[in-house]
Image (cartoon, rainbow, N blue to C red):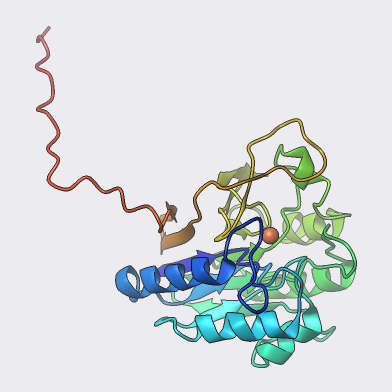
Length: 274
Ligand SMILES: [Fe+2]
């Protein structure tokens, strides 16, 4: 199964820019690239920070671009989003009984769970016991079947102090829901937004990945705490291939047109036989 992840689109109103970058133009190029190369994907997940300031006009601008996608899409909430404005623009987005923007997507590859880690008024995240109870129930329903989680904020430090100070305020309810119910045996992968750069690894035996934004990136800076060190490194989106025995996350730097046409690799060097 092929799915796509586009993250941290940070749309603004009226053709505005962020740090000299036009988020709408970046997203339009992304949509065009998807339509040209990955129209066979099952769907695309937009993993939060859909807009930069959560304003209704930014959501309208976002929706106008996303409606040009040739694959279905699902939206998530991030710390730059406004829950009410997001839901007004995308009213079909499911939410749980507490009004949080979290939902399950059933696919041939297993169950995808989209979580809401947003705490209004802070760029840090929260995953309260109420939300964690929903997660626990959804994990229980999945039994031993494969589960894939999408959440905006990582629930553990990723080694970048400027981002780690904006992680989940209290990861314990999430950790308990995950560790209390299951292990990597059926939670196959966690996909993050928020980080604005490619990071992958494993946490408690569960594989994870984060991707560059379609706009500005966060520097690979292990020292700076504040302000967040930003860069103009290239944007990307994720092409995710899920098979029963593997999950692949290809980081697709879609603005890079540097393919070397017709280049032939040299023959491999001959090796003396022993
Ligand atoms: Fe972001």
